[in-house]
Length: 290
Image (cartoon, rainbow, N blue to C red; front, top):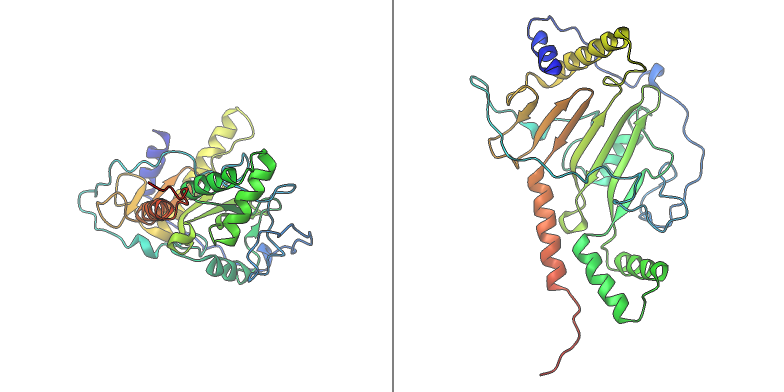
């Protein structure tokens, strides 16, 4: 309720906002650490990216990597009375857009004046489509590999050799302000493109329980909403969503207290369906004779 009240306050405000720029005040030094890039694509200069230490691959289901584990809510997508549809496909968050390749993301990051940097550990998360992982597990077990560590290496080796290993998530941060961006990618079945962008800042964080902290939190959230409306316009679906059609799977953006989520569920679902079909078509069953 508080968020809704704050949001409607914005309707009566004259919004004054200066876009964030990559000026001298926002820059900070490059990281000098050297990272384990054993499973990085050879075509990329990955000095500023990392995978999990002491692990062959930073998997998307590890405890401190991806956050894309909750069910997706696509139950409704309705247009507010008097509102028009907006081209959400053209939206960006700090310059990052849906449909970008890793090359696009990497080039933007390098030309962004160091505003956002890869996090220091696990900035690149690699994965294998779940159904393909089951295929490879079967093949390795049929070859007599059952010890957990050896089985994992067998699966990873087969996935890499067959082009199934893909960049699943890229984690970026702006250390000066504590802002974070997570970029989620489809598999190689659909060209390994961004289908979801998560942005988070500290507007919803408070250091204590006193009334002054609650007041500070409310003001931070209000200031955040003002900048959101300035950049994207008023939500056209409910109090917190921007939609380009009433099809809930089409690209849309949702705003939260200190967070934004830009997602294309059509792209995500298409990728999952294609990966499942390809894994079924290419399952290496025993050569039965009857």
